[in-house]
Image (cartoon, rainbow, N blue to C red; front, top):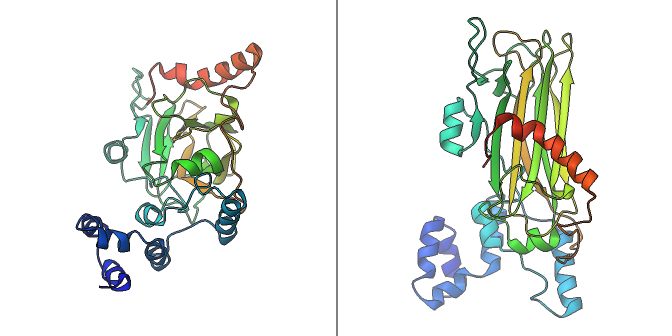
Amino acid sequence: YPDVVIQEIAKRLDYGTIKSMKLTNSRLRSALLDPLLWMDLCARDHRTIPSRKFRNSLAENAVLFRDEDRFGKLDYERIWAKDPFRSNLAPPILSSIEAMRREYGWRLDDVGHCHHPTLPHVRMLVEEPPRGCEPHPEVQRCIATSIFWGTRLMRVNLIKEGFSEWVLDHIRPRIIISELVAPRPECSSIYRIHAQLLKPGERFGSYTAPSRYRAEEKEWPQENPGRWERVELVFEDYPTGMREIGVLSEGKDRGIWGGNFGAKYANLQIRIEMPDEARWLSEEDFNDSPDITWQDQAAANVTRAKVWNRHRKEYI
């Protein structure tokens, strides 16, 4: 059969069957490796792909340097199977803390230690819908905290999500992390978000260059509107070798109220924004070991110690 017939058959099959077909013989394998097949599937199934400007720039640079090995090629099969450039790499909040711990493997500190008879022992819980704050059209569920720090730590493995290593190492696209947060209007509260880019095997919270770490904090007084607002962290010009993103969100109330009157957080979003121009960075660009004075390093460690040391545990 001609390639077009094999490819039309493949478009009607699931991915597991297509992968099995590749193992049958070299004739089928050749037809199923054609990038045009996977580009058609990406278009049909509305996969997000880098802009036409980026793709043209990538091709032009490869021709300019006459070295196709230096400039990577987009893996459209991988893009179709994983959809790595979708609008959000973070999964949604589920109906309970235990469900997220079980399904996602998130670290969630939801149980506190308090012997006071009137104070709660639950650090955080899922509210559906959120209680006590102004409604938001995009928020159906949220995590609500209490007098204890309610902490959620999650990691995203960018390779498992479908990104090619050459994209992460040589293009280094913008990484944008955002979350919706809100207080209870009658209670003062605080919220923090910390994000870190990680190499394979690195623990979240270990010291890294400042280009790999971002944090933001919000506080609300006792009388406030109780409105949702978006907090955003952006990574640009980071070192080579980054393979995971770790995000820690936490909140608490500052009024020592009984119940879940602390800061609420919802709709975590992690997205990768590809440029329109294909710059090709080397390992020396934005090196992971810049010249940092001991004063700068001490200040950074103190800032992070507010989070890591308070929990007295090794984060994943």
